[in-house]
Length: 277
Ligand SMILES: C[S@@+](CC[C@H](N)C(=O)[O-])C[C@H]1O[C@@H](n2cnc3c(N)ncnc32)[C@H](O)[C@@H]1O
Ligand SMILES: [Zn+2]
Image: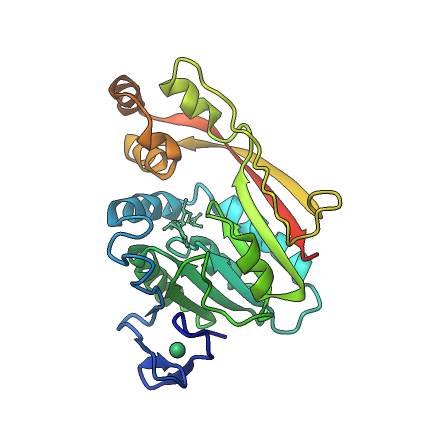
């Protein structure tokens, strides 16, 4: 499944490393993941979400606020993979493995999660060990240079993560599907209304996926919305840290945020399913 990030030849597991026939070698960390990010293209120390962002997201996700989404996504993937004996699923931009570990419940599945953040990937291993899952592997890698062979996956999943049309099409089998999750227009509207004078709805994502069936845009689109009470200032803070708004909110807006004891918000998502052209 894995290919060498340097020469693209197949990687073979030899003791505690992954090696290609040309001798490029990648050590498997004590936790069980592997770093396949080439330093020529990225600085693995700073790539992707930092330790604080990973910690905030983990704390929030572990409270279960997005559990309904994880289950809905697993059901959508199950529907698409129905009839495939041993589905291979790539979770691209997997973060700390919250959705990967739910997808791992799909019968006889093998899950390969990648993320460019070494902090996030290290946490994936902790999560799957705690859950006793044996069918998940994780690597530090970029969605724009996936360390997987051509035509090797039945599904690629991307949840709030960068989307790379070309790479997803390359690694998917001809009948493979791409499932993209993004915020719906009303996602977290109440939180924005509490912080901003002029809250706005999110624009629905409009990926131009040239390698996927675009005759009628997507094959399937599920808009999935529910309300949740975010019940403590700490959880509100963690949620806000997970959003792009945390980078562009004034000090006044942050003060309004800190004053909130709890808030009921719309959790709104679009699950879009694409098949290859
Ligand atoms: C908003 S988070 C979503 C994480 C996870 N899918 C979730 O929903 O919990 C976006 C993730 O994309 C990762 N990321 C950013 N650029 C990336 C890239 N080029 N390749 C792979 N992952 C990337 C970040 O490190 C981060 O973990
Ligand atoms: Zn190599």
